Each structure stands twice: as structure tokens, then as C-alpha cells.
Length: 550
Image (tube, rainbow, N blue to C red):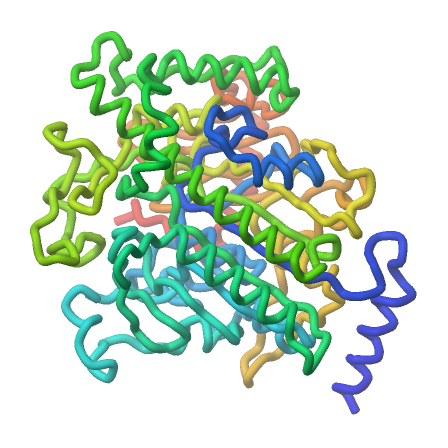
């Protein structure tokens, strides 16, 4: 009886209560995420990289300019999937177990994923791409042996967390030509000849959509989670894509950054009075940099990786159009963190990300070695802080950090039948925890208090539906912590601290100085102290551990 009542309420919700917001038929929902992509990389946010398909979604939907992630891949994905802060979901850090409930590196059983929630509410579900919310294991030693020898539990793999179909990688970064932990549903598979992971993610997502669109047995809506690894290192791209950007970055990072800033200002994405943040003091000027050809090639390959992802998103859009489903599909696009400053060397733990050899058995050139250009399978390189600083224009710092360069993400929401007065930009504040409650609301789903015998934590985020209606709403305060980098945003004020000896709390006015140039902690000591207390209250509540304490 309880289940029947829930179904009836869902029907009433969709048919009568919200006709002005979306169609009576529940929408399909696609959640598309890029990996390690900067705030200003795509064209619709000021970048010079060709992203016509993402730009189409942005121009026909809503561009959120003040949206936040959780600073790193695993925490962001945990929040995205659950509507909780990452610590509450068990992934306050990465996928290593630190012996504390909020840092187990594994989705806990006191949360439900968006796929589990929607599946219970009558949606079909699929995922294509990177999972990375379960414990790490040395897969290079175990993955290609017999399935029963893999030393990890599959309890938190996608099929066990609500996805009916899954193609992708269980863990984080890896070769685009021969990725580790490649899986179909629960079965390990190997990459075939001419394999390129970005294309495979797009093709499988398109296949899932076409199969669901052509299904005759039911008329259920579907939810798809498409999680690219592009443009995360290693710098692997196809020659035809790299060729499009040959020479584009010969002018260097200083000039490209200035050009992006000018375009962003002209597009109204940032106020003209904001100042471009200073170049990272550890980075040389372009004029003082040696090996300019190699450095320019790094950004050419990075741009090609973004370009290829956009091409794949175009194929996904075509699949929706071919099956007559585009207009009533809510599509989100966002990024898991800011551009990545990490420099790869041969000293990185091979078992973590580096394969030992190429598919043909020949060795890899591991690390940023200027003797060989990036791009092919034989290399394993990154574009480092110099170009990451460009990707994060106009902000400071990078992935890992709670300064804007680490946590600011463009968010695109596209839904022809459900968004009022589309083709607009909003500075409405939002956070990754808001995606789950938004999806639950538009789907008419029921978020459970209990699931599989476990008491489920209440969602933390707020639905973005008022923004779909072109309305304003007050967003609650937001907290962050990752690897001891921490911050708190309440209204216009942002408190932030970088985990480094001698670096203390900073305070910024986000309305007038979102590039974080003018630290007001001494000018407003009472505000700073109040924010510190609010941060600590939040941190204690969600399970943050101060790892700096003895």
C-alpha cells in the first residue's frame, strides 16, 4: 500500500502540480562531467578551444557562472552522486582508507546514489565513463588475471549502486589507448585495436540512448551519467585533433590568459572591474621559458582532448534528436575540479596510474620529458601549472585547492521543455550538492529515509528549479575541505585557507573580488572570526578531520 501511495503521489506531482515548469511526461536526464577541465576552457566561457556542441547547449539553456565543485575528482563525484558533502558519503579524501568513517575512500551505505533513487522511481539508468568512488587497488598487478583474483569488493561498483548498464573505468586516470580497470557491467574487458577512451565513452552513451529510445516494452524515462576522463592527464590525443591547434599556443600562457580575460569580460561572464589574478609566482614568464615548442605542444594536445570530448557530446545530442527525445531531456554539463597543476615524473607510483608498457609491449616514456612531444600512446605527460593557470582564468590556484581556481566550475543546464526564458546567464550561487535534489525534484522521485535496511542521510543541497523558473533564491552557506585545504562561503563572504606552513585564513568579498586579490581578514576581523566559527561548526557536523593536529 505504501508503494502504491508513493506512485500515485508521483503521478499527481508530475501531472498537476508543476505544469508551468516542465512537461507532464517526466524528462530524461543526462549528467555529463569533464575531468580536470578549467573554468575558461570552452568557448561559451571565454576559451579559444572549439566546443560548438557544448556552446549550443549553453546558448540554448542556462550558464551558471558561480557554481562550485569539491576541488578534486573523488570528493566531487561522491557529492554529485549523493547530494551530500563528500565526507558524509565516506570520501572526504581520495579512494585510500584513512581509518575514519568520513575518509574511508568508499561510498558508504548511509547514502543513496541518484541512480538508485531514480531507478526506484521508475527510471532506466546507465553510466558511461569514470567511476572513481570506491577503494583503490593495485589493478596493474591484478586486473588482467582471472576475475575471482581481483582483490576488491564490487559492492560499490556502478551496477551495485543503481546503474542497469555500465561501461567505463572503475578507478581514476590512465592511458586513453589502454585504460586500466576497463569494465562492462561487472566484467573486466580489454581495449581493442584503435581504441581511444573518449570516443568509447561517447559511443557507449549514444548506444545506450538509442537502445532505450527504440525500446518498445515500456515508455520509461532514462537517467544517464556520462563521466569523461578528458582532459585529465596523460596528454593523449588523436593526430587529426592535435593538427587543428598547431601553432595556436605559440604566443605562450601570458598572452592566452589575457585574451581569455578580455573575452570573458566582453561576454559579461565577469565584471570589468575584476582584476586578472597574478601568474603563479612559481611559473616563469613565457619569454623566460625554454623549450617553447614542447610547452606549446602540451596545450595543443590538451585542447585537442577537449575538442574530441565535445565532438562526442555532439554525437550524444544527435542520438537524442534521432530518437525524438532532445526537447524533454534535462542535460547538465560541469567539471569535477579546476585545471590540474600536477607535473608527472617517472617517480609517480606506477601501480597508481602508470601502465608499465604500451599495448604492443614496448616501454612508455613516463613523465614530462621535452625530448618527445606529447600525444601518442608512447608518452605519459601533463600540461603542468603554467597552462593550468590559463585554464582557470581569471582565478587563482588549481585542483586540490579551495581558492576559486580549484573549485569554480561552469555549469550548463539545458532543457527546452522545462527551462523558462532560456538562453541566459545566471550568477546564482550553487554547489555540486545541489544537483541531486534538483534531479529528484524534476523527476518526481522519492528520496528515501531508509534503503536496503540502512538509515539514509538527508540531502544537503538545494534544488535549482527556482533558477529554471528564472527566480532568485537564497543559497545556504557552503563548506569545503580537501587535504587540509579548507574554506567556507556565506553570502558574499568567502573564508579560505591553503594547507601550507605559515599560510593562514584569508577573507574575500566575492561580489567585488572573486579573483581573490584583496585579503580582507585584517580589515574585517569580526567577519573573519564569525566565518571561522561557522566553518568549524560545519566541519564538525559533516565529519571533517583536521589532519594537521598531532
